[in-house]
Length: 119
Image (tube, rainbow, N blue to C red; front, side):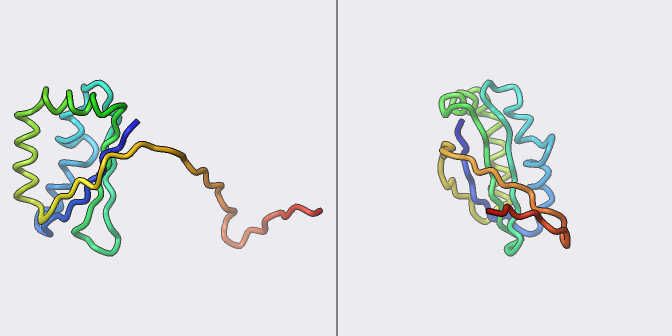
């Protein structure tokens, strides 16, 4: 699997429209929802810079992504035009393949004592 990562700075007055486009059931996910290999989109919103978002598009392969872009060229162009109006900048950070996934064990509840192993 691959993830395409974008960093997008959204104009303050357009944040609602932007979030609707990339959010659950939005135009972006609907565009590719029937495309083979599309696994979904994740949107992260920066807690310190309210204009900054990271978008992660998950695909099985780059070839499937490229094929979907060719098949939906007109609709994709319209979405890109909307983004131009709503954003200050858009940078494709890159295309990434997962190499490892960390597992984090949940901690106990605050104030709860944990058991320690004794040697």
